[in-house]
Length: 353
Figure 1 (cartoon, rainbow, N blue to C red):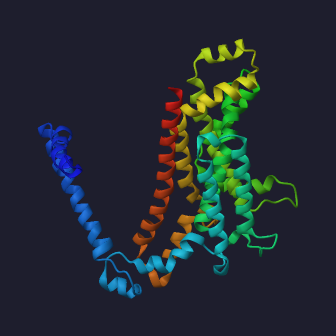
Figure 2: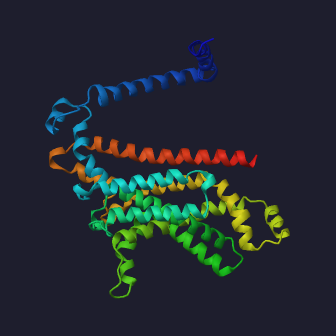
Figure 3: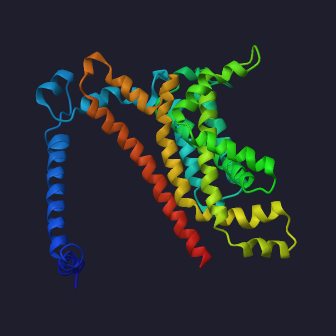
């Protein structure tokens, strides 16, 4: 029996078993199919058949439909912000080498100290390409924006907040009262306020506590604020993993003569990290999207460059196109992180068995 014949034979059986097995499920399935059909037809007509693929803003207003000329006109600004147009190869190459590094180290067999070294080198190259120096013309970070800025804030935030979160989680479970108290106060304080207030404080209040003549630019302050904020949530995620480890694991480590640090590094923390992969990635995804809040301190991340592009007097009224474009970019990154977490779960589960 050919593959097509198998499909023709099995598909009706699958439909009857899963979607039309009871009268209630049959009614719900019919309404769901009708809704999906209507939406599919509308999207096809609006974004493909009836879309405007060339022309000006006037053409889009006259013909209606999805205005692709807006994206063709504004895509460069949305992705790169105010970065000099003649130097766009630099942020492009910076992101390519960063993504190549992430793709290389994604295998669990490559996890370890080398992973941190590779990421450190990759980010140094990233900053060199975007910021300049050592043979490249300098570009001040007030011109950084769009996707490179969002990627930088998100991935550096994840990279540094995770180990900081582990330390906070260990401190919260410590028998030393002072460490536990400080950890609890920090975690509860940070989790009790929104990220936008932390960013505002880092931009406005933090410089007031610095000595005269000492100042950090707003991009660095925003990055520190994001790391501080996310690490509190990561700490609670890791603490949940630590709490799920059986007491016998600690006793077995003690029977082998391992110290507290050896027990945590080689036995407890690796198991806890495997357990909390889903909530960890969920926190990372939320943080990646929350980087859009840096607009409060006038940083032009991906969402802010999109909003700025929409304010062009010649292209007013095409907000849908901009939000669809930027939403697709966010969806691609978040879905990749989600799929990667599922892969890690599967691989670790197979190894445990």
